Length: 68
Image 1: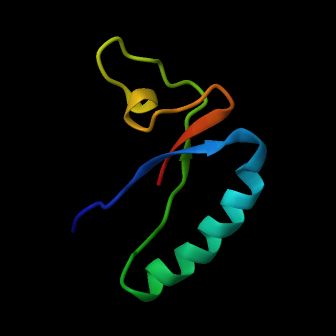
Image 2: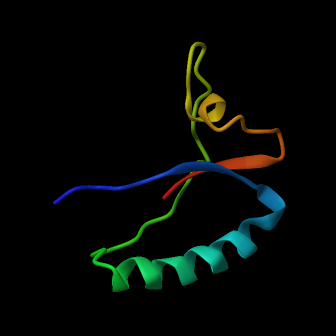
């Protein structure tokens, strides 16, 4: 078994739109063998001094980091 994931920045104002898209994508992923699908929204992710999830996705102030 393995884990496949991605990190992205989602405009906070569009989180419901993103969640709807992610729910549709989860169905397709499961049709192609995924056993589960999880969305993790960063509400307490510290910003690193050298590298962090924030800098990895070039997050803007009005965006939230998501790992899915």
